Image 1 (cartoon, one colour):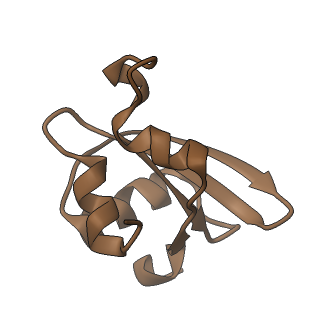
Image 2 (spheres, rainbow, N blue to C red):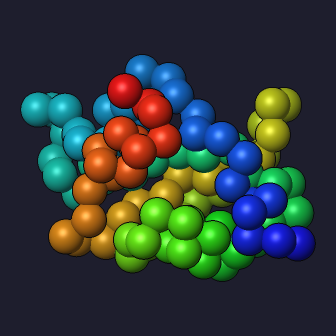
Length: 93
C-alpha cells in the first residue's frame, strides 16, 4: 500500500473540531488531535508514518475505529506541533 493511499480525507464534526485545540472545559492533554478517514487495511503504524511524512509533524499516538463510513483514525500530535495548523493546511477551517 502506498503512503499516499492511507490518508483519505479529514473527518470534520463538532466533536472533532474540539479535538484540535480543546475547549475551556477540556484540558490541553485532550486537545491537539485531528481525525481522518483512513484506508481500511492501514495499521496504526502505517497511519502514523504516512501522517508524519505528509504533514512534517511528529505523532504521539493513534487511535482507530471502524464505522459504517470507513476506518477512522484519531491522531494526537506531539508537544510542539499544532493540530490547528494541520487543519488549516487540509482545509478544515
